[in-house]
Image 1 (cartoon, rainbow over the protein chains, first blue to last red):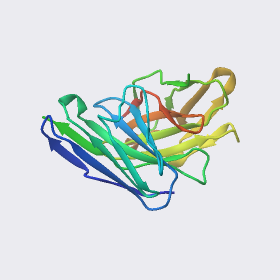
Image 2 (image 1 turned 90 degrees about the vertical axis):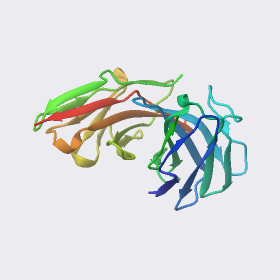
Image 3 (image 1 turned 180 degrees about the horizontal axis):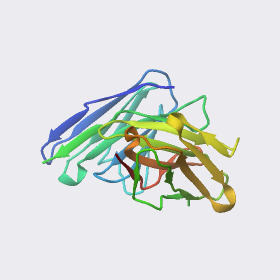
Image 4 (image 1 turned 180 degrees about the vertical axis):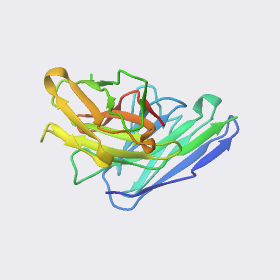
Length: 115
Length: 112
């Protein structure tokens, strides 16, 4: 299994600012994913981040709003840009287990509140 | 397109009684399916997974699920609910091995 940490665990930000969320994994992984969980909702995939290539964004999410970096096989960042209250959510990163069929491990999440 | 339906947004049971959380899926191929649990203010934890081996899958904390292709279902059960089972449960389908499609979730309440 993989152990995933995220920073910060929570933050309160003002509208119009940006926040960068970090995701660190204790082992090398090929695929990392970023999800958003809006209040009382299920998880929605934002993008898939593979090391050495541009992130692949899902419908409804764009790079200008959610730029992602993936500098190596154990680390990724997600930036929430020009925030509005509608961006208040929990943001989670996950990784695919290389040794187990399609199983994913999730970080603890970053709880973002935009005022 | 791949999709997951969880028929009940909220299920309430008494402690010691059986739990049934329903999940149906739509997929153009034989998928892998998972159940994850999310306790309040905690991360997602994998309960169990189906990956084309045995159709009856046993997971942690006494949970199990049965994959029924003819019914496109993957319902989660537990013989006897415990207070600590109160949480949000997500049925999840893998999307061609690339990423996950989450169901809307079912909130399980356990009454004393």
